[in-house]
Image 1: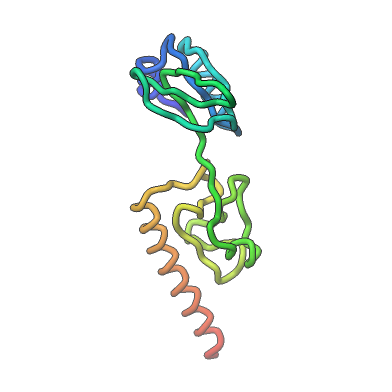
Image 2 (image 1 turned 60 degrees about the vertical axis):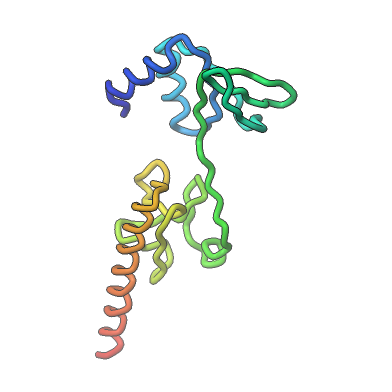
Length: 158
């Protein structure tokens, strides 16, 4: 849920201004509702932006065959696995295309752990793409994988 401080900042930046939207999905409706509430002029450019350049305190967007000037832009990131491992291992992927993990970074395949920008818990709206979170997730995945291996070793030793 958006808090009052975020709403105040949106109002300050975009009230009465022209804003481009290149968003889709469940959060798009809430964003549109908030921007309409503060009186922003919305321009739907979803999937059509070819380039973005700073210009005159705003942005010039190359959309299809025309240039559109806007004061700001909201865009949703896309996620693409750069290696085929997730698909090859049959790991569960979210609607965004990221590997779904639990709190210990375990995937849908027993003994396989994932961390980094393209692994996220199912309760998060999207991966937390930062070096710090990726490193933290890697530490958790490493510890969980060692625990998994040790528990398997203990079972086979009996």
